[in-house]
Length: 220
Image (cartoon, rainbow, N blue to C red; front, side):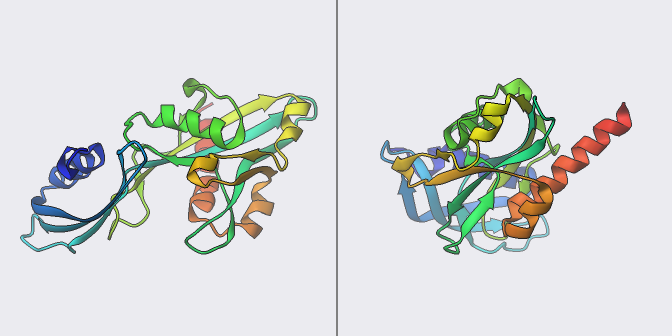
């Protein structure tokens, strides 16, 4: 089993912190959660990090690693109807049945598009290729950098499918049971989804996708 300093997630965090002229004096694991294969899932670290202003940063870090979110707009070839492909699953953080976009952790991979394509298929059954994805931001976004290292890669995709495939995504089951993922897919308009969802990733996803589409139209 690798030490925390040998883990890819730790190395990425260390590189990012040091690239911003901060100095890491120490980083000691308080607890580690690993997968069955021994690879690191999460770690809670006690750190001593000094800023370029020579001030100590808060000393507790939740080492989680990066993740990706994929905003997919499906178009029905037969009818021209367009809906966003979303997933519902109950979340441990609030107990709610959450309406979200497909997403997943990068774990040991640094290839975000590759992970995105895999996660889409695992959660929804929709096959996509990496070149069908487009980046919605030019950098990773941080949702809680005060305590966590997680940076989120946002991708978009516009996929045209036949009528049967389009309608198959209503209440289709997906996810990885070994990881306690119990997912059902759905197709939603932005208006209907925003009335239901409490997910920050979903609301931001809609905004970033629309912003990308509007920029593309302006450049035509």
